[in-house]
Length: 124
Image (tube, rainbow, N blue to C red; front, side, top):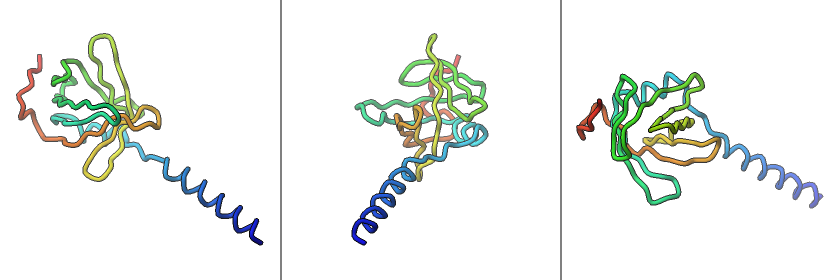
C-alpha cells in the first residue's frame, strides 16, 4: 500500500511540474493590440539589463537599444529587427506584465506599456 501511495505521489508531483511549465502565448491580434503604438519598459530575465522602446504603428521602433523595425508574425510572435538581426519571440500575459519567451524559456519581462511616445524616441 505504501508503494502505491508513493507512486501516486510521484506521478501527481510530476504532472503538476509539467503543468506549471505550460504557458499560454498570446495570439497575433492580442500582441498587436498590446504593443502597437506603445512605449515599453522592460528587463532581461537573467541579466542586469533594462531598456525602453517605442513601437510605432507603422512598424518602426526606436529606444534605448537603438532603432529598427517590428511586426507580429502569423503565429503571434513579436519580431524585432535591428540591423540584419531579427528575433521573433512568443509573448504571454502575467498579471500586469508581459513576458517574452525564446521557445519555452522566459527571457524578458515588459514591466510597463504606455500609450504613445512620452519619451519622444525619434522614429525616422
